[in-house]
Image (cartoon, rainbow, N blue to C red; front, side, top):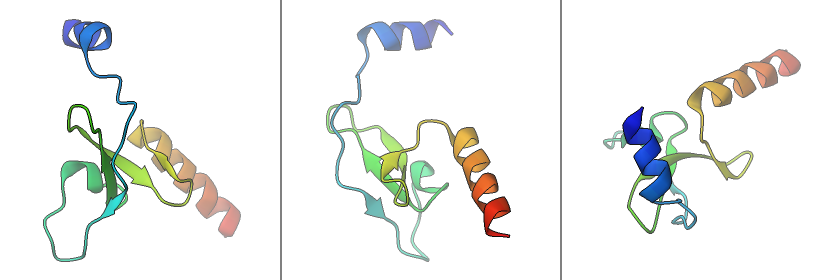
Amino acid sequence: MIARLVDSLFGCRHSRYSFPVTVRRGKRRPQAAALTGTYVACLECGKEFPYDWQEMKVITSPERHRERLAELAKHAA
């Protein structure tokens, strides 16, 4: 908890991202690409984040992304 506080005060704001990278099948996936297969990296600090091509935005909460996918699956059925 203290680490999150210090990071929020003095850490990177992650305001600039790389172009989204999609990992090919059979290749080793970074942790950030485990959720969607696509990720972006912060150009300031290098931290990787999952990226959703359908909504064209960075996924900040994997739990919220899973909930959104469940909603879409209900509507498609």
